[in-house]
Length: 384
Image 1 (cartoon, rainbow, N blue to C red):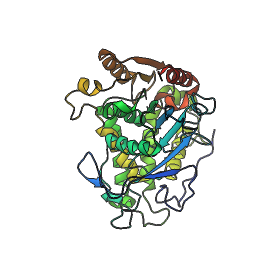
Image 2: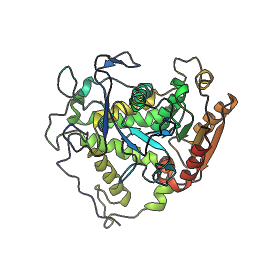
Image 3: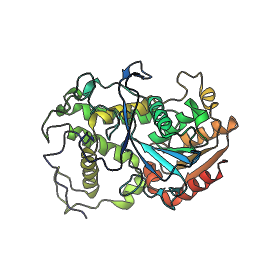
Image 4: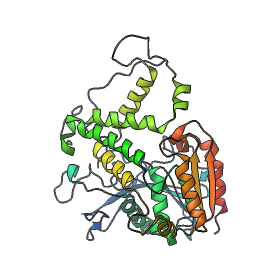
């Protein structure tokens, strides 16, 4: 049993990284300020800044570069202490930084150093807030391409990602096929399903229904007076979809926090677990970024504007590893199997990886002992 977690009354208005905060391992790339970046939706952004981190050493011919793309609430800190994929990336690990030059950037619209809603709008000097435009997975990839140019990487050895990160990796293979040698697509899909969009809508409504959201312009509020309750509920809802009934039953069953009581307050251990994850996200994320990135996932459809799925996937000309998880209820294996079959029908060499894990969608993050050797073998198999 775990003690009940009290809800703080001084949670930050935003968990976004801001200039002046500790930089950590971040480095920064700025897109040309004199050339507005046109977004897929028709709007544009000026002076985009990209936060990224690197591990390992780039070879003289830049042939050993691997781009790792993060999921919805990830950031550039993929490796090292508290990295979101530290079990996968590092010296001697599956994505071996003694061999590969590994790059991970915070996506456009994010909140950990890359331009997003919490960033200052150059035209006003104040946070974009509600005025920050809708961005898409394709926009994120085009920003990453600018970073690749700045790093001197003409062609990635592989672009690797899970969930929203897998969407980015797949778009790399379609938008810029000549700049990738391989793709790793974990727990992802070629298009967001109705169920995925439905869960996203619930999360966004939770954020927007918080009276402290203020239509997205809350950055001047005092600590504790931001939309933390809405963001917390959105995260709690998402956390349920990231795991399976099997995993929840094994970990919590009906265990209680302290003692059973006939009360409307949290009694069960699983309630305390969800509170913990909700508060944890509020401390490191931004409500507006959650809305924008969540929406970008809904809009993901590689066939959009490209004639058909077959025409879109026909641009992929490199080996692909497709990873599915048996117990994933949010991005079920049927989606990855459909992607695998469509690519194979087009003549693409596909390495099919099925993870037998009860951990649900989050298994691609958790089961590094199972997934790691397969990714390591796949990376080694790519021709120089």
